Length: 500
Image (cartoon, rainbow, N blue to C red):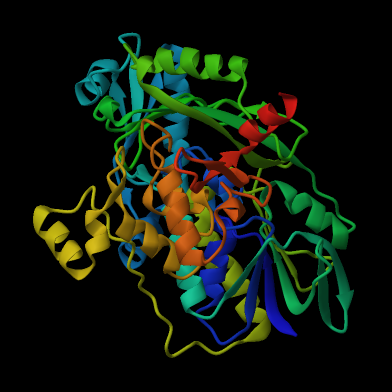
């Protein structure tokens, strides 16, 4: 019997896993996707919120402020991109100013430092592209940005190095209390036993909670749609720019990313489909309209992609974290919507403390607190590039031109702990395919590398899940000399040939 099973390998589950790995216990993370970072975390604003928006006394407020304070040290320990770029919540009239003053008071009650109300002119002095209609703003000096993929991946890798096991493609279907613990059954008929179960399943957390508890909870998937712009927009804003929040969330923002893009969004639409991560024309039009209120001359011609994610909004409006009262040994980390990314490190510490109060597991003497990320040729100095190429010539072979990603980086992404097994896994670790051409140029070479490193046929390589195959199989044809040549066809080609 295992000590702990965690359901979900998103940023919350991975943060909990890392903290549980500090002590001598057996921990298993079950994830239905093919990789970590396959749920809410993969479609995220990447904002480290200061903590002024959450209601004082709430679990959101507590975890937000603690998580924000932890982020600089965690980024140094686990080597992922983070920057304290500040944020601005802008207002357009006297009513907005009252809202900003309330947010400032609320933030100070939560323990947020460095909050100030500034004029519209002062705000434009900081951000010249702000709308001329802005009359005031709340300046949040502790606001920041982070790479959400690499935060999640770094936490999971470090947990794995410290003995936490991860199993992918494991969709949990049933949970039963048996023999002083729990039996967890998956869709593939595999079964696991553990003394404790931690529910970090994002939009599905209500399903697992309701399997074991008579006190039901309900999570609504809240879809947020985004537009991402090319790196040519770098510098359009430096701070993260919010509008005044509403009951649906923090509103549409305009923000730089850690890698020099400009990101606008999200919308906030309550839907029924827990897999409804598709964009709509109406949603993207709303993003453009509302972002255009914040900034003049928004560079909309530089949009390179759109995407949508789902936030896990629980009816009570707060995070639900802790042991389920009528099911001892089952712990929730449910309703983790914004500011969930910021809060994840603090949630990890909190849940691990709850488990330790129960199992009293001793601390590991050999816990590895630090992790080194994959070298990045795009940002390396000339001297660093020379050293990398001298150590491994594959770092001289550029695969992704848009993001300057080399074969050495991709090979490292595949072969490190919990390495990439899919094209999306590579993309989230080293950014191959995230540039202007959106993988139009580098996909074939990435597939060749995956096939070689994993020892699998090209037609078994997927973009993300098991059904997201790129190729159907080999085709053959004779050249003029009679030699049989082999190539590959994709699904669209195959369907076209059937019709003809």
